[in-house]
Length: 499
Image (cartoon, rainbow, N blue to C red; front, side, top):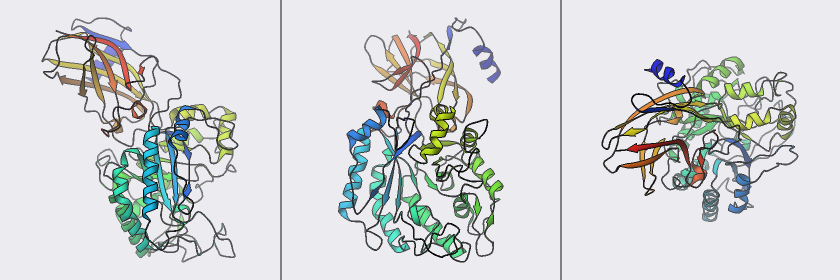
């Protein structure tokens, strides 16, 4: 059947077949599309001790007007914000009702603005210098919170996270260590050389219990990102897991299991050969701390095909490697690691280089998914109560597939009455990986379809019913003249006659 579809798609732009089918070719757009849950994000951190609630009108500007972060020479529009919550006043006490109320106000503002959030909680973003043995001279005490406080806070956050998961794109693990990066920590096993020089099994077990509680605090259709590949390997396979532990594959992905819900955030993307320790074996009780750059890179490249990946650059000194091609390989690295998003505000020097060298605009278009409708084979006439057979060729030109599931719907709109019929195509866009996909569906028309002329649309709304009617949360195809902004539909430029 695949060969037959390919043969049909190789025909002329539009012509009629014996079965009254029409082949339509669609034109690609080069537009930088502000689609949900992908692209460059705007960071907006806040301290619990000085809480400034998000402003919906300001957030709308991020989506609708070009933003120029700091000393950037580039501009971005964004459908994503990063909200880092520093719980500086709650290291030894429960979260207050005032804090939880402000958190809800943040979610409300983001929803009103039509954006989504990447969220992370941490207890400190400050470092102590000194004469300790760490190579970066970051010294203890680090200032994060003890386990009993962390678990209590997750318990308090669970209801509000679940209530507002519709506007949470992804949650980063956070909580442990400075910046919530799970490295310099007073209580969960110090991964630096300031301590025993490796993470002991007891600390891995505590970290695993913490990560499980965080996954349980979110609905099962939301992912949690961890800072390093070892964190996932030790969670899935246990404290003694080696760096050669197997990544996800096409058979165990997107199934709502714990393993399928753990992605990665790289907060020092292309900062050094191993991204400042991202690809490092931090050991266990029976294993020493050691470099593992190549093997952990292969693990991440394989696993992130099925999980969410993103992060930020943190240092411009790793040049020309972090530059555009041909001197550097920034774009290739994003493609290999299936990046869906990046911080627009850090490190601005790195991103300015991308803009000056001409690859920034390509990156903005290809972070995450980018769906291009290439061709469709559609019937011109169909009888009531019969079946509708459609074939489409869709290319995902982005670096990644979607990490959150959403429906793919064929909309039949009666040209006279305006009545709309919604037909679920039973397509999970999480499986629309980078590349070309030939899709065919046979759909039984419902009894509510009456005789008449129907306009056909492709509709990819948010999975949450409360956001489904809002075009800001719908996916716009990277094609010319298909988008219908009020509805969030993509026109298939075809009328179907129902007899």
